Image 1 (cartoon, rainbow, N blue to C red):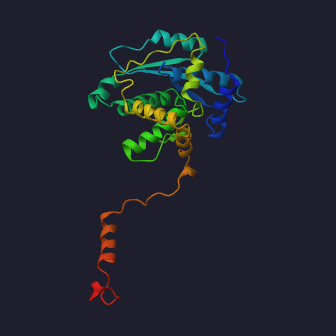
Image 2: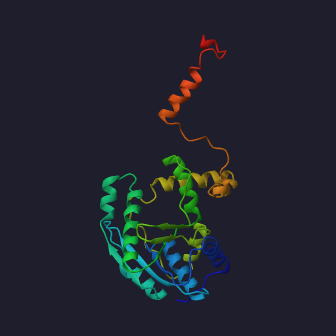
Image 3: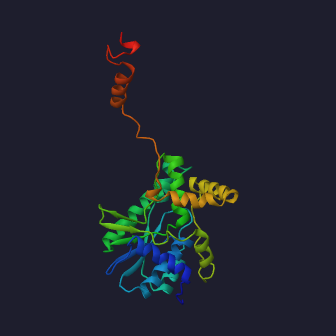
Amino acid sequence: MELVLPRNYARKVWRAVVEFELLEDGDRVLVGFSGGKDSSFLLYAMRVLQKVAPFRFELGAIHVDLGFEKPSDVPLLEDYCRQLNVPLIVRKSQIADIALRRSRNNPCSSCAYFRRAVVNETAAFHGYNKVAYAHHHDDAVETFLMSQLYSGKIQTFLPKSYLDKTDITVIRPLVYLREAEIKEFIETLSYVPMPSPCPVQGKTYRHKVKDLIGSLTRENPFVYTNLAAAVRADAVADLWPPAASREEMREKHQRIMRPAAGDGSPHGE
C-alpha cells in the first residue's frame, strides 16, 4: 500500500500534533483500532506521520473484540495492519454483554468505559506510553452538546490527557478533521471498513445529537461553527454561580429574610 496523505489532511493532523504537543521523540503509541472508518484513517495517518516526522516514535494497533453476536472480522483487520506494517494486538472480551445488560437503550458509556480500560491495561503491559483514539472534530462538538443536554455539564473530551493510574497519555490527533473528510479519504482506499456489529448503532443519544446539529446547521450554517468555538475555555462568558449549599442558603435566608432589629426595616420592629 502506497502511503500518501493529501496536504490539507496532513496539515490538520500536524496542527493538532504541534498545538497540543501530542507526540515527541521516543514515544510508543498504541492506536485504538475498531476497524471502522475513523480508526482505519487514524492508523493510516499515524503511519504516514511515522515515516515523515523529524523524530522517531513506535506504532502499534489494538483491536478489542467486544463480544457481539457477530464477531470481529479479524483477518480483515490483520490484513490492513499488515499492509501498513503495523503490529496488531487483538483482545477478546464480553464487554457487549455487560454494557447491554446495564442499559439496553443506551449502553454506549459503559461499553466505552470498559473498552478504554482494556486498551489502557494492554498499552501499559506492552510498554506503550501513549494511546491514540480516532475522535474527530464532529465528535468533539457532539460530545460538547451531549454533555449539556444529558449531563448538565459544559465539557468535551481533551485532545490530550494524562491518566495517572496507568501512566498512559491519551492523544486524539484527528480533532481538526471533519467526519466527512475522513469518510471521503477512506473511500479512496481499497480497504473497506468493518461495519459496526453494535445492535444500537444509529439509535444512540450521540446519533440524536448528530441529527439535531445537522438539522440546525442546515437552517443556519453558523450553528456548527458556533458550537465548535464554544468548546474553547476562553469562550466562557457569563454563567450563574454554583448552586448554593443548604448551609449557604440558611445563612442567606437569615441575613436577608430576618434583618437585625433596629436597622430601619419594618420587619425589625
